[in-house]
Amino acid sequence: MKRIIQGCLLLLAALLLPSFAPAEDAATAEAAVSQPSVSVAQRELKKDKDYQSSDVYARAHHIIYGSKGPVGPGGRTRIAVIVNGDEALVSEDRVKNDIYAQIRQKFPRESFAVMKGTDVNTRLLQMAEDRYAGQHGTATVTKDGAGTSGDVGLVSGAISKDSIQKEDALDADGVPVKVQPRGTADLVRKDLVSAGKAFDYQYVLMVTLTEGNSEFYHHMVWPLPPIGSSTTKPSVWLRVRFVDCGSGDYLYRNDIAAKGKSHNGFPNGRAFQDAVHNAMKEAMNDIAISED
Image 1 (tube, one colour):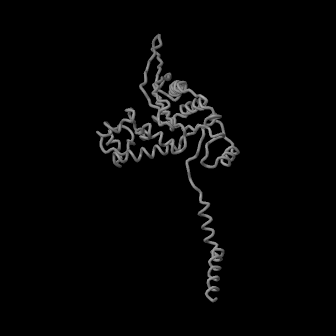
Image 2: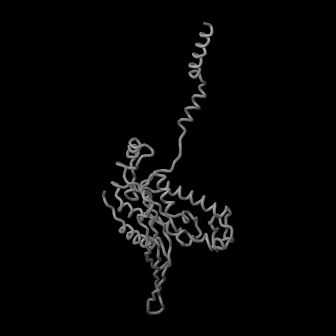
Image 3: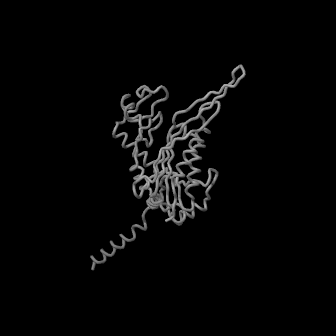
């Protein structure tokens, strides 16, 4: 009988002890449960560059779909858009805005959730970093080692001037990589498919901008003294990669060259915008949208 009473007392103590846990331990446990997490923001392309989405829409979407659900009502087709390329082109806001505007027009919000593929781009850059460092080591080449005449060379991983000229100076398409981060220069179709699938995209659209040659004309105006004007026509390559993450194939792949025009000066943002606009228009016209 004595042993039975002792057993009951021990059982009662085991049940009651958690209720008397120190307040500090309880607070620590609660803080651990409510600790915030960090992730890449889901950013859908705006209707236009000045459009501001409402907080009400964002809250309603989170309630309906949760943090990992499809973006937009009805689980619209998700497309990740990545724009990259030469510094002189991607640093021009008017160039990027023109690209986004044409994509928005081609893929209406009612049927497509066209996202700035920051999550996909992050995954691609991680893949490129791991692959490039593994193939070429970890050395960093300065302007002397890279043989450049300007700023420090940002080509990371190569260890000799010759290797840069023969291997690292070109991207996967054989196009020269200038004094800028290599970015996704070494990645191919299967890498875009893999990164798109990782974040539940149906398609990944990567637009890479590359400067071409420029034509310069000088026009003389008479009579004497000679007064002249000049015209510059810069060429731009628009390299479009549009992959279907389901099939693993390109839905559309093209390299499109186009010209812009500027007067009395070097190529400027307006000239680049004109060239990119014409090339992007051709690419969007090549893509057909059909309802299943």
